Image 1: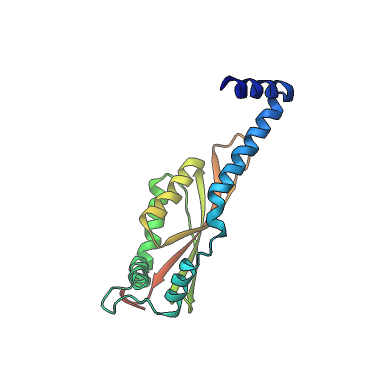
Image 2 (image 1 turned 45 degrees about the vertical axis):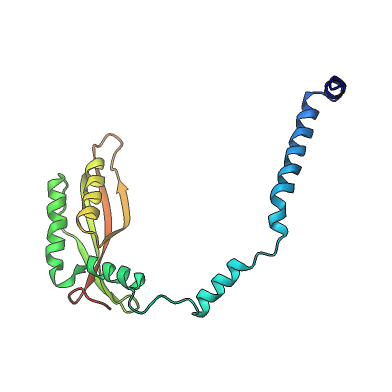
Length: 185
C-alpha cells in the first residue's frame, strides 16, 4: 500500500493549488534548515571570545625576535614618500608629463605644509591644464603611476563651448614628502 500516501499527497496538492503547495514546501525546507543549523546557535560557544580576550590582554604575544608587521608596513610607507629636498624635480616631472600628453600648462600653484601627527611634509600642487579630455585623464593617471607619493585631491573640468574639443581643468595633487632619508619614525 505504498501508493496510498502518494495518492493522498497528489490529492492534497490538487486541492491546495500549486502556489500554496510551493509556499508550504519552502516553509518546510526552512524549518528543516533551522532545525539542522539552529542547534549551533543555541550552544554556548565562548571559545572565540576567550581567544580574542587573551590576545587583547597580552597573554598570546608573538616572540620578541619576530618582526612586527606594523613596523614593516610603516617602514615601507616612509620609504615610499618622496624626498622634500628633491621636490623641484617632482614639479619639473609634472610639467614634463603635461607636455608629453599635449597639454598646456603655463604655471602652477604650490603650498607647503607639515603634518606633525604623521611626521610628513606635504606639497599641494594646483595645475591649470588645457587640452583634450582624454589627455588630461591620461596625464593624471601617469602622475599617480610615476609618483607613488602623490594623491589626487581634486579635479575640475570646464568646457567653454559645447563644440570645443579642448577643455580646461584644475587638477590638485598632494605630494607626501619626507625631510630625511627613509628610516624608522
